[in-house]
Amino acid sequence: MPSIHLRLRSPRRLLAVLSAMAALAVAAVAIASVVPSRADTPAPPSDQRPRLQAALDRIVEEGTPGVIARVRDAHRTWSGRSGVSDLAAGQPRGTHEKFRIASVTKSFTAVVLLKLEARGRLSLDDSVEKWLPGVVRGKGYRPKSITVRHLLNHTSGIFDYNMDKDFRAKYAGDEFDKHRHKRWRPTQLVDIALAHPPNFQPEQGSRPGEPGEWDYSDTNYVLAGMVIERATGGTYKDAVERFVIDPLALHGTSVPGASPRLPAPHATHYSTLFEEGPQAKVRDVTEFSPTVAFSAGQLISTVGDINTFMSKLLAGELLPAAQQRQLLDAVPVDGDKGHGGPEDVYGLGIRHFKLAKGCWAWGHGGMIPGSATRTVASADGRHVMTMNRNGDWGEQRLEDAAVRTEFCGR
Image (cartoon, rainbow, N blue to C red):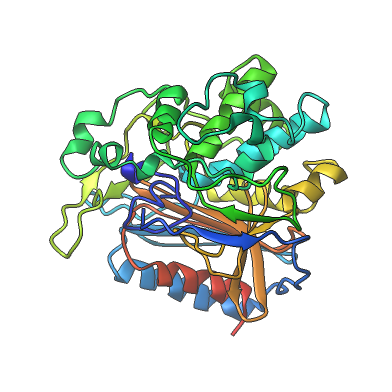
């Protein structure tokens, strides 16, 4: 859905529908040989949490229905909330609520593929054609030259189906209700993308140190989910549960598959569906078919579960050392059409954000109609914060300010 785009975070645009949408900007950039060594900021003093609460309050004061956040550091766990879970009932948001995590799903998808590689089931340098013969077809596409690694770090050049004008129109304004329950097959989403020429040709292997280009595309992660299903012989849902959800006991996390419903407890998800201006209609978009996002953004979770996942991942407790190194080998994202700065780098389903001068954190963002999620963590996973807004409009700078307040000190 346009707004179901999973983009990294451009709130009022299709993104970054889902995660994300904004204008395409394609930039040629050199691939970093290794993630720059930057010291992540230590946990802030306890007197900073009132400032973080004030930052959450400002998000609601600017018009977002409600926001929740949970922080875990070496000392304690802190939860904050502001605003309401339902505009009609006026019930306050709760930090145990479940919500659509949009593009944060990509981190889960990447971990599954890395675990499959660790078990010898596939290689990240396998071609897409090897696993999905005949799927990637279109003028200018070279499926034998596109690897699984290219998909995971967005260096494939494959067009983003969420940027297709006709597709986006199906989920904008009044059209949303006509299509909210439509069930999409992954191949249908891929075909929408392949009707457009590639944005560029990938560099073979796309390893750090080689020149290449970068463009965030949900199509990459739809294909990644299809590779998972081919390699395991089962469903994407089964793989995520087996390799991530069950081992970490993420009881609030689920893969909805084709179900349009959110499990309780949950806030009402509100969206302006890409309408602009103060008169934009706010709509209840809580229910819709998550097949529009598949393995690029369909998961449902809680702030606590995402914190656990990110903490364990960055602490090196989910992946063997070889795969952990690949996870964090990152490429520049200059020219990114979603949230992020020109000095950010992107690994495999995880991003290194420059939050402020001398202040960096790993994580991901995601936006889907009615839900905007952000998770950030220190390099060792000991300091982690996840926040969610049950509205997909508002100033991105306010969310950024909340993250900086927690991670960058005064």
